[in-house]
Length: 406
Ligand code: NIG
Ligand code: FE
Image (cartoon, rainbow, N blue to C red; front, side, top):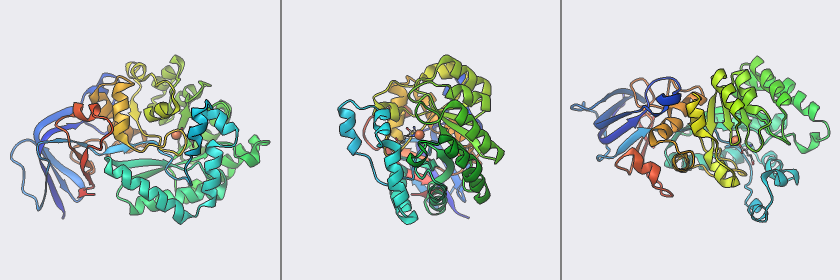
């Protein structure tokens, strides 16, 4: 049996429980001073503040802050190329949709992703995962969605599965064949929707390589009715719905999320009151992506209204080569406080337990409690406020995944 003791913890800050936290409960975390955590065979065995037990492997936290490992519940990890060429276009006033409609954006990344081999995509994504781990992310969701053809969507999902097996970060896969209608179907969108529903989804199910189905419900991508058809097809094959909603225009995606009882709705930058109401009723988690607002120069999602309405708020990076080339959850934490005006306690819950719930893993990760995986971050920080306040440095000092220093 492997045993690791993390001792001399100045502040242990963690949400508690195996389910999502909403409303006032989002800000109710446990704070222990002078604590220790015992991890046995990769799983937390005990947490205490009295005399610590003996263990062969000791990590001395040096009186610093310890939190659960961060959970990045929304990334587009698998892609070929980058899109730094779009920066100049943006600086000259082109909008995200202008660039997309001119053949840039998701379509150009799709071309690069189709041209890449499985090995090339895996090597590139592994490098990103290494960096995420250094910033404190220990669990991550990853979407397909730059293949937009059956063989290339399946290729991306296979890469996610391979990385889950060989990289310390645990990965959860989402099928997002409905990220954009690809160029070759521009004049027959109904046929592309049919392909997603009748060919891709059944194959994804048969191969057991994704848990969730996501759709980019937006003006110029998929309408509410197309999104409904795709998410319902996914549900028939056991893929739980997620939805990119209200990122640029509020066309009804968040209302649909509530109607379908989606596990989460993402972005929600311009979410209207009826969307918040529908999500509250449908038990939908709002997965907010503040680094995308930052990169798009957009407004920030109405996070406080969501908390007040009892919608659980999670936060993630949205790491992708276009709207958010950022994989640093610490920056997301900063923006959660500074732009959403959430408290450090609410933000901690958003990037740990609620993020875990948004990918159906709240029983395994997202808090420091017996029975959860031994995923911890020792921060170069005296307390929780400090990591919310410092910007631009990497404060993750020691990252522990399943009871191993990584
Ligand atoms: O979440 N909104 C859709 N997908 C990504 C952007 C993808 C891209 O620009 O390549 C997002 O913002
Ligand atoms: Fe996204």
